[in-house]
Image (cartoon, rainbow, N blue to C red; front, side, top):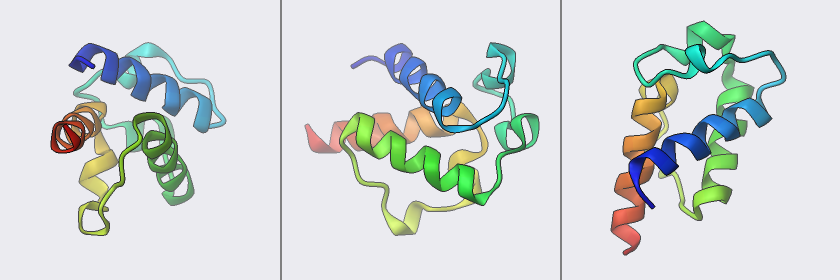
Length: 87
């Protein structure tokens, strides 16, 4: 899976998980999605669980922090790293 597919899947997961109107502009890779979308802690956990399911990865407890969910770029790079670890 290439990085563009990872971004696409993450953006879709966020849109499906967060119960608000979300534009593509709000999900640009450099936008702080916590602020632009108004993600709270429940949303963040729900998004991470959805990402774990979609990519069949496990988000390590040590990696759970606000920076991980801050941008789609952070999420995509994390997923890409986890996928490369699995093989």
